[in-house]
Image (tube, rainbow, N blue to C red; front, side, top):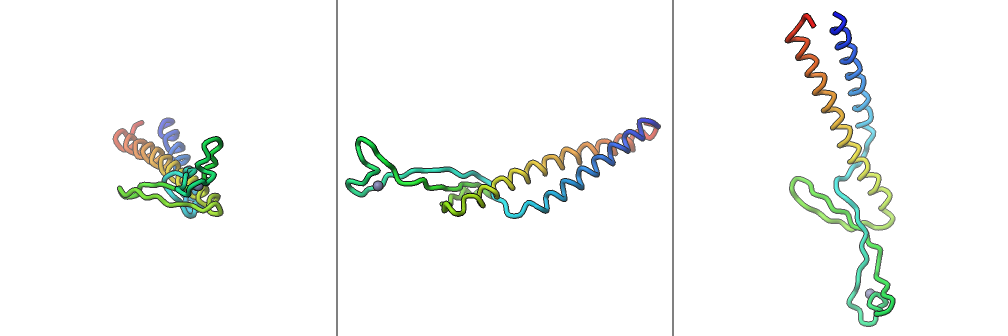
Length: 123
Ligand SMILES: [Zn+2]
């Protein structure tokens, strides 16, 4: 009986946690998988500063964003003015994955607790 109460109160806690996860999920907004990287380029213009033998100053930085979605790899160049929004979207995607993982963990625990309670009603 005591164990049964303990199980029920844990299930209540799990339900509350799942409810909070769902509330956070709907706040995420736009999201992007993948990663952002910075590049500097060397051009082909003769005598350009990027080819200076002593102190080459390459062009850039240029930012590009790579991701794989549904098996397809894509690269997009990102303008400096879009960087902070893209970074926010990348973080939102990571947060989505983390929240979904937590949701799965909690769901598995709840399902197992319900299964045990049904299999052994005297617990
Ligand atoms: Zn150059």
